[in-house]
Structures are given as C-alpha cells and as structure tokens.
Amino acid sequence: MKIKNRHPVKALAVAVALSLGSLGVMADDKAAKPGPVVSGKEAVEIRRATFNLIGKNFKHVGGILKGEVDYNSVDVEKIVNRIVFLNDFLHGTFPEDSNLGEPQSKARPEIWTKKDDFKKSLKQFRENAQNLAAVVAKEKSNSPAFKEAAQKVAQDCKSCHDNFKLK
Image (cartoon, rainbow, N blue to C red):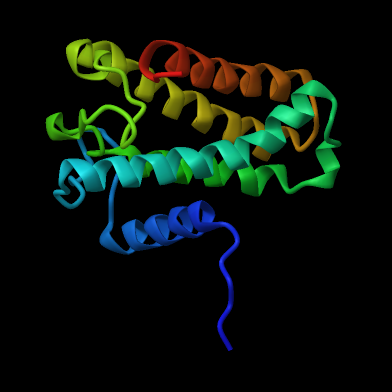
C-alpha cells in the first residue's frame, strides 16, 4: 500500500532533522565539534528544514503569548526543548557557497557581508531559547517570567527575519 505524502516540506524537515541528529551536528560554540561538511545547496536545504521546524514549534508558544492557545493545552516544555535542540542544527549551514539567492534561499547577502552581526543574532537566539527552556522547566505556567522569556525569543525571530531574510 502506497501512502501519499500530503506534506512534503514537513516530511523533508523531519528527515533532515533526524539524519542530522545521527551525524552529530552540534551547536556553534568553541567546545562543539563541527558537523559534516555540506555543499551550499545542501546547507540551504538543511537550514530551511530546520527553520521550518523551529517555526512550526514556536507557533504554539506565539499562540500562548497572543492568548489564542491555552498554556495547558500543549506540552510547552517539550516544544521549547525541541526549539533548543533544533537550534543546534543551524551550525555550519551558512557557508559562503550557500549564498544562492531565490528560489533556493531567502537568505539576504548581509548574512555574509555582516557575518559577525549574524553570528551574534544566532547566538542570542540560542541563549534566549535556552533561557526560555529553563523558565518553562521551573515555572510550568503562563507566568510573567514565561511571557518575558518567550517574547525575547519571538523578538529574536522577528529581528533576524527583518535583517537577514528576504521577504
């Protein structure tokens, strides 16, 4: 029996994330070992899949912030930990030869011309996501601390989209 895949982007995102997990791609810090060397086109596929998964997961947190989703209706801790985990997959996915432009990539050239600013944005996103995970583990509610930490992650996403992603 052939199963029809109605969501090819989701399937690709899951497949990429799972395959990267088995390869041991790590966070972009001094103690981490680099992930596999990938071509520019592969890097675009990996980062698009990763950002897609991060966005799909953060959608629930955003819904909580907007009052559209009840905090207790979703497993917030699992979602936030998944975002932290997925963040590690971004390491090594912005090599020089991945500056391909549309339709392959919506990455702005500023990622490569303002590399330090971009790295700082990714690092801040990772740190704020980790902080949100710590708050969620401790608070376990839609507390003011949760809202503040989640808002910082949302602002990181918006800032990066505004500065480093083509519309």
